[in-house]
Image 1 (cartoon, rainbow, N blue to C red):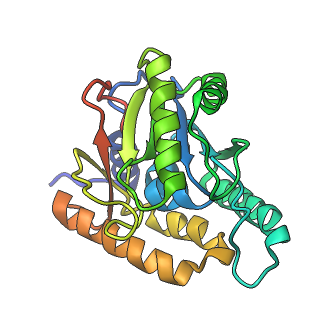
Image 2: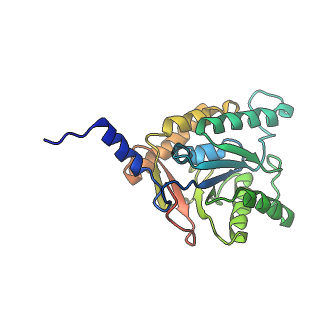
Image 3: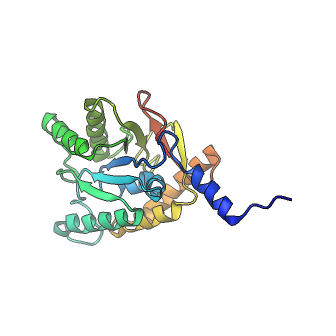
Length: 240
């Protein structure tokens, strides 16, 4: 009778996490853009944890610093509070943070904003790029989606390009996934990263996001899953 050792099980599990389109030893640069601190963590924190566990480099790019909203604190303190929360969340996920120079609730989508954001994304040289789905209730989410999409187009579509969902049915609408990522093993770190945003009522928002990932898991055959829409002109082999 053949017996499988614990080491063999671990090696098999690790090999299952290898990104299909990446040769062994190559490290990807992953960029996730979001309207506010917390958005990328809620939308694809479990997927990010899988990338960083393999040594890939992930940067969260936030459109603003959340200057207009932090529960129970003066508005003048919100930007600093939410920046600190974002940095803590990124540390939990082993990611880096970057901030575009826009203001919460006052997003600009014009020629100058497109150019400035494109330069920021180009400086990060992403192999794979994630952003908000554009049919969303929050104008900052719609703005970052447009800015990111334009940056991808202007770059010659060299990065893989995916949309993610947040609070489906409340913020994100009309989202029909093309791809799923199993986050069963990384969901707890995603939760910790989301709860790092203590000023943003995580008990309420994470409960809703858990329903979303639970449903996507049922849909795709996992316990918990994050879902994405791949642009039809994007390469398809870099999603973990």
